[in-house]
Length: 383
Image (cartoon, rainbow, N blue to C red; front, top):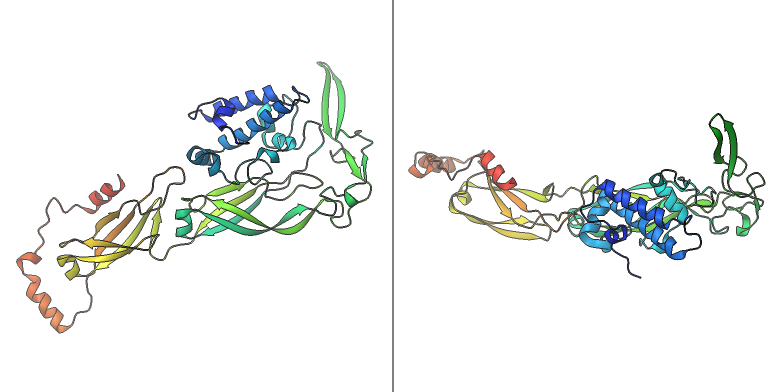
């Protein structure tokens, strides 16, 4: 089943502000909340759909990717507990864990509890660094990385109990995971709920612990994770892959995998935003007579013509040969800064030639308005 447009789901326009997105989500969440629609699978699906839409549109980075590429642009960076972003991976406890603050206590949800009130353990987030060269940044890339993390224990299926069974309902909280106390005050009876101290809020206790994970439900293991890196990312950017962090204990939910981007410096091209800079030196003869040079690009080499009479500091633009913008379809340029090399060591013959040319009419500087100053040239190329 294809996903609906997130803006249609929340009934908002693409120009909606962050506050308008939050209000729209809260309205949908209240309307379709399971507590108000017990047993209604359609309402539950709409509730999950609204939560998924809000999870993307409330995140500036994910929203930019979605606005540009739609659902395909999110890859594994959307959804709850599902690398593909499918709503099939949703867990109601995870939704409350992520967005409990949106409801403002209206339904009594909290970051670690589902509708039944029992505690849901959420694993911690993991942070990894991915090094990318200029070609990978320009074209986007799929990276497979090996991560050492907590995963669900297979022998007990992550429950912490031997063979996945062997539980007792907590006698203290009767399986609710909470202890409710009523206190009489001058304003009337006040009810408060706290996690059960006997079972830690899980509503049950293990009678026979798994011998592999010793009752934790999680063990250390290595996992190979595929990460889709969009084109145009930059040093310091972070991507979030939902549900690929550490697994929560005893049937809990996984945290997220936070991917930090590191750039491998190119030997010849220097990056500035979406533009690339290249320094090239030519001699007096080539500057005076003109020549053809080769400029490195992301794809290979490009031939560039140097016009006769080129001055040192001349900037040539290779339009569209730079890096793409991760948030749009635009692309930067390669700017070639041409420098005329002044020789420092001359032979007697070379000195004689230069002396004979020193007072030549064509070697005497005659700058015109066309010979722009350094500041004028920089202003031209960055406007």
